[in-house]
Length: 86
Image 1 (cartoon, rainbow, N blue to C red):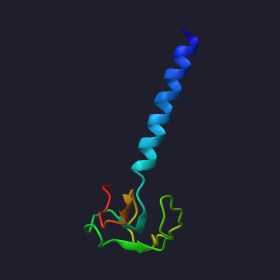
Image 2 (image 1 turned 180 degrees about the horizontal axis):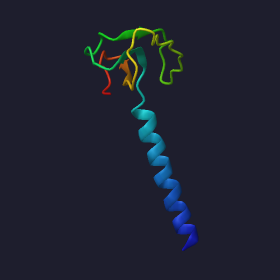
Image 3 (image 1 turned 180 degrees about the vertical axis):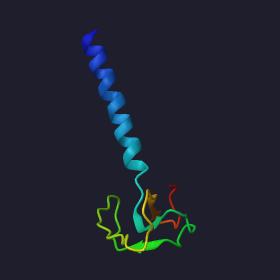
Image 4 (image 1 turned 135 degrees about the vertical axis):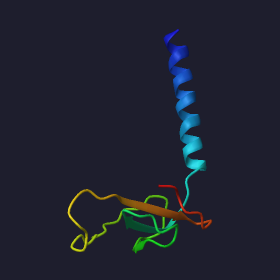
């Protein structure tokens, strides 16, 4: 019974990993905005190197923001030109 469960677990894990690899998208652009969403492609661009995994650092100036809490969002675009949801 333990061998059957182990085999079943390995098959399920293999299927999950296969699905993840098939659905990987190349990220080609990134942007951020503060508080109000200006619309896809209209945020402040962030410099990235295109790939399936992207790391970046953005310096977001806060000197012009009034005191209090603010919403900061990052959005990315894939190679098909489709912007992600927030």
